[in-house]
Image (cartoon, rainbow over all chains, first blue to last red; front, side, top):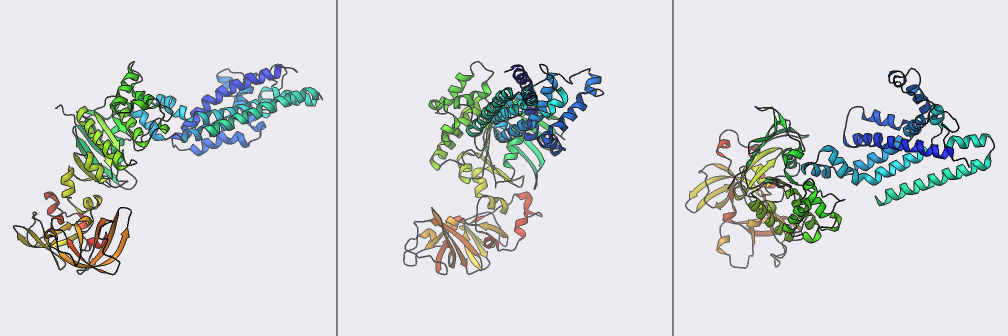
Length: 213
Length: 387
């Protein structure tokens, strides 16, 4: 078996998970603890990748990263058809799963506990890291694992923005597609089995996190 | 005695009414008493810095915590900088921390934090529970941890929101005593929110009756209970059997009142002949008389005959509603074991005595006597019927 796609997939997923954790947690706190105009709109936009075809998500990313976009022209960032673009695609698709789970977990923390921490001398970041986060940890982790599994399996959006360049942007799901196209069924079988095991283990982990949490 | 002084003068538009009140508290226990939803907790939150009033000023010994729309620069100190001890209604202990870690939480930047926390747990008599988590402790134990944690940062002000409402009576009495001892020892300014009269009596030096975001009456606990200034206060205090009567005679031994044709003797109280007053008698001060037994002298005055309208048994006491000849009803309460030989069924006639010393006239403060009578007094004299 060619290990290249697996290693690349792990790298892409690791970066995506870091992005999902940071951005997802911030969004979850915002949605769980405050009311602001446009809240429903923001939530809907975050959740769109759950229902949109991945190719559509990929197309939007293409517009955001491609020639003529502020990111490419203004900042000179050229990500298209590199593995970081694949990480971005995976993060966009995994994000809603994280936000939903983390938001529910944070909302379930009794605000009186946060208030207690405030009267005991804690600043807002301290309240979050010492009280809210430890109490919502299991739900947040469950969301993170779920979104990581989703990121690992990303196919459509990745194909649009990162292409399918063996050794450079060909992740495991893309490699499976190629293997099948080329009738390399033995290789496809191995990779499919690997993906299935990883997904299975993730779901078991999520379930355990949610049950004891 | 060094006297600390907390002054809170706050205004806030709430959903159903406007909160507007001013409290001055020294080193004492001031009880905020009133029905739920009267704005008591809001007052505590404003003082702690968890809620921002629309306008007002909160100062501790002249140091401003909050100021808006008042002379002087605007101030709104965040909760963490006010250093106020707050015991929340459901204790609000951190469930992921042990008792010791909870108490050490405000001391986390001090090297001797854990030792200090341990000393506090010892003081509260729960040192042996230091390594238990909140869910492994009883309500009373959790409450002690909550108080220890609130006191850990050595605050001058302690706020308590219905702290003992979930505890049984014996434990409650012990904690009430401990709280008063702590207040004296640490010379704390204590604000204590409750809707239980027993709590108010046991811990309070002074009482502020709060209704719809306003202070209805404030004064020493005994005084407020003995002399509610108006009908709202009396109702909040759980006083039943309010009625309007005319003073028809003043004697050395007391007053004679006319309650729509029923003559009642009352103890001496300031009221002029001819004046229409609001009076009440507590349900416990109306006694049922045995027709075949000699009468105790104390029950001789104010004997009336009535007909039982309703009987409500409860676990520890019974309530009777009795219709009197003057067209009004009174409520009578007595322990379940009392009057066992009498059947006391609805429709039956009973002989009652309204204890003379139990007849209390409500006194509005002088400022309200002329002109602006409290609104409740304008209703027709069917007061007792409506309660």
